[in-house]
Length: 116
Image 1: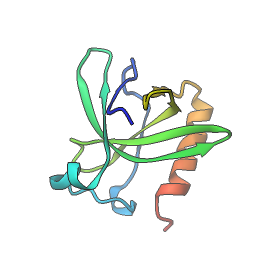
Image 2: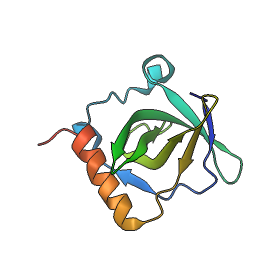
Image 3: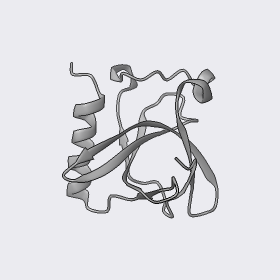
């Protein structure tokens, strides 16, 4: 997988969650050793390193869940439409439709967050 992705948008589509209920480790001292990461290039050409929580399918599409590496609390999850291209490259797209984003967020919660 290519470690750089140009998503060409601002990151306003995020999903907040209480990190105490997640199954993943938020100890950022070993980010590179324990987690696969990806670097997003933002609209202003800055880069944002993110930890890949997982890739999952919903209604015949694939989605990726990311947490910014500098988010020490781990309470911001970014969700994108995920497409694998040729040559080990990927494309991330904003989930524009609010209803679809809510459905994908719910699917993410069902798959990745512990039930209380």
